[in-house]
Length: 162
Image (cartoon, rainbow, N blue to C red):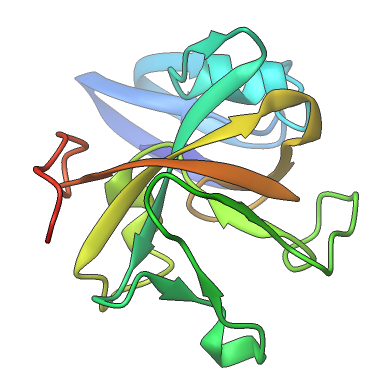
């Protein structure tokens, strides 16, 4: 469970409750207080979501359709070719949605932003350029990425498609 803003949560004795706000009231449960975490910082965001950072790079996920293209709804179709570096031409160095390429900590989370996804990709992002986006299902943006491989909805590597 999650307690945001001024929510009131009552939980059973073995239920984990993530406390996101000092204004929320939680009764019962096992409280995981994250009110002091600065999730706007890429390194803290990665650590919070269990994303290893190696040599300044993090592996995140993108959910896409069969043609491995995103951004059609915004007039900026972007193809994520496996093994290639992908960049955007509208980078906005802020924590707002838009103005960059968007990724999530897991394929499942990425699917929340692409409900008709049929394919998922693991991408490598430079953490120095990663900007977490607050609110909703976790996601972050960056000006570019390197497409590593195709994975299934659980993040397991798939054999390359012909």
